[in-house]
Each structure stands twice: as C-alpha cells, then as structure tokens.
Length: 195
Image 1 (cartoon, rainbow, N blue to C red):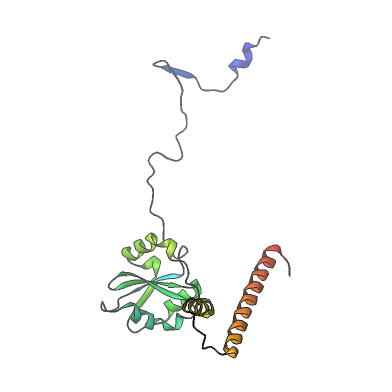
Image 2: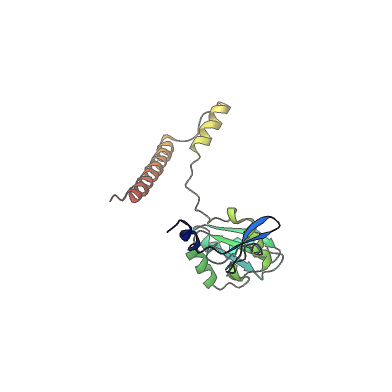
C-alpha cells in the first residue's frame, strides 16, 4: 500500500483554477449577511431609562417653576426637569419606582407617559442627554461653617455666632461624618460578605 491512498480519502471539495487563483467551491449559503446589515438606532425602551418619563400637553406658557410645583411631592425624593419644547419635557426621578408612581398619579394641568411611548423629539433628547439623565439624587446636608470661617478670616471681623451655635454646628458635622463612615463600612461589608 502506498501513501497515495490517504490523499484520495480527504473530503475536501475540488479546487477550481480561475485566472491563476485557487478558490474553493462553496456548497453552503451563509446564514447571516454581515455585509448588507444596516446599523439600527438604539432602542430607548423603559428598561433603558426607567426613571425618566415624558411630561406633555401642558400650556405653552408654563415655566420650570410651574412643572416643579405640579411634581412638588417628589422634590424631597429627587426630581429634575429637562425641556424638550414648549409643551413637552422630560421628568427625571430618583428611581423607577417613583417614576412609576408619578405615572399613576393624575394631574390636572399635565399629562404623563413612559418615555417609550413619548414623542420622537423626547426620545431624541433623551438619547442625546442619556449620560446626564442619571437618577436625581437627594442633596446632602450642608453647613455654612467653612464658608463663614473663610469669610470671617478674609475680612478680619469677629463672628457673631454664639459658642452654643458653633458647638451645635460641630456636632451636626461630626454626626454626618459618622453616618457617612458607617454607610461606607456597611457597603464594604456587603461586598465582602460580612455580617
């Protein structure tokens, strides 16, 4: 038996010579046409920005303050507005749950709907500003102690704050630091799996 018997048993398709090129004959059509594929616009569904709703059908002379007044019950939880046009705006809430709550509430002067059912202009605005439409966060507690100290130091005047007020402000800052430290420790313990 010679070595030539093995070559004839290889199941390769025959080679065709066309213009000096070697090419294999294709016996199967491709499953996907990658060359003819068109890129599609990203789908902006409720799952993508569930904390954003469209506010619409309100008077064109409404201002931001008017819309904030309509949604005043969400101010403490975190709420922001981005304008689309004179009668459309995006409502950005702190969480999808509060956005869903706002959708279920009936308002006299405005209508609301999920962003997926919104106008083309609202969806385009949301796409353009997606990085800036993060859930609104509650503003942290602040204190004017540092600003007061800097101003008093720069002007060279005496503070009119009583020692009791200074102590209360220091205690408030210390409590805020302790609360933040505790939150960070709890977050770290959760990631590490500690109780």
